[in-house]
Length: 170
Length: 391
Image 1: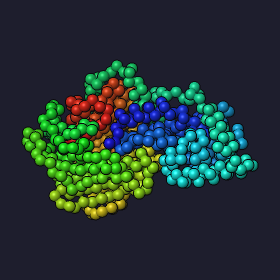
Image 2: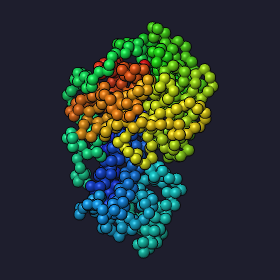
Image 3: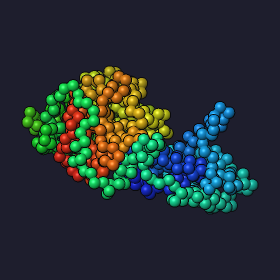
Image 4: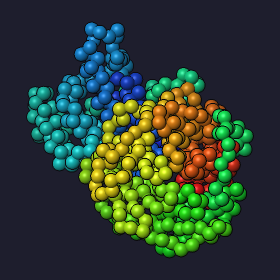
């Protein structure tokens, strides 16, 4: 049965209480900026809330929220790319840069290497090693097959190893 | 775990740990007029969080009355409505004026799900499911009431929905005004609860009663379909849809789609047979919307727009999408209709069945709205799950 807005408010509230911080952290490791991460997560919750009443099976809300957060990070990256492309015509940057307390991307060789990976590899590795999701959960979140998760993770680890000057194997 | 994996895990955890609860913005809705677009959802969520603090009750909300002008003239109140409580084994026939239960429609061994009405105030359609999981089967029935509201025999309609591995289920039904056709929105649970597949398509099925003629219109991958309603005397079918993959291109625009089923057949493309009207709702999200039988208007329950927490039931032009009048406005900040749903409209669009929840409430309130005047009807059960009702 589809859920009404009563269910939406309660379900999204519960989801927010229990997983807001976790999702902000997921967005933070993807974007490198806390304020931006909060915006992405807030947008994700808004979209989840808007869609809830017309969903027949609003199960897997957390997986859906994770997907929405990752989608938001991708959109942000696209908008950043557009902003960079048109920088001379813009009065200022569309996307805030990392602040001194929250910037993470440039603080570690590992995270810099992670940030240089293709998006899919980066998402799989973050979901696996930050969010501790198993292969099936990652597949559901990214809407790819489990075998694609495994191969993407392997390629990502290998690329990280190469970037850091060592192999990804023991 | 390899050295790379251990190091990656540690550095990701450390980086993520920079987001500490005390550094995050507080969850409070901004004051009216200053609500950011991305924070609109906070208003209803904060309303629910504040349930225990609310001192205004349903009575106060109902005294608020209609916010818009009344329609040109009253249409006759339907004599009966049929309501279905969540998970119920029967449907209740009730008198519209009082909500008094007249009779019950029982479908042995089945759980009744959805209800829809023809325009004659006597003919209703019900969906009823048996089995569970992949073995769930939903069948459809027509029942005609006597002048006193007593049900006659059930007529089984020539349509069946089987859940299967994708978990196909019913997400709304609509009986045509003359009672001759039944439209059913069929949606795979796999859209959300399992890994979605492009092969799992939502669809609209339309059965013609008394014949084997049927049509199926299949939506694009990842499409959710809901809120079915017939219009133009049963020539076109309205519906809402959402893509559940990626973000909507214009999240602030809700479109009512119109399916022209004049070419019945199997597995036709839904989008190729549909036109759309964009409802000009500003920043307010549409939660439910139905077309009137005459086809001139869309009646929609909208959630709070930016800068407001008021729920609005409004009428929109089916031709232009412009809002033509507000039928009901829930109280704003500090007062609490936290959400509502348009359940059914009579052919004139002047008598509406709605369900809504107040912040103090522990169950969905069933009510009728007649020319802007709200009257609470007896609840079938004290549940937050939606009660379905139609007249």
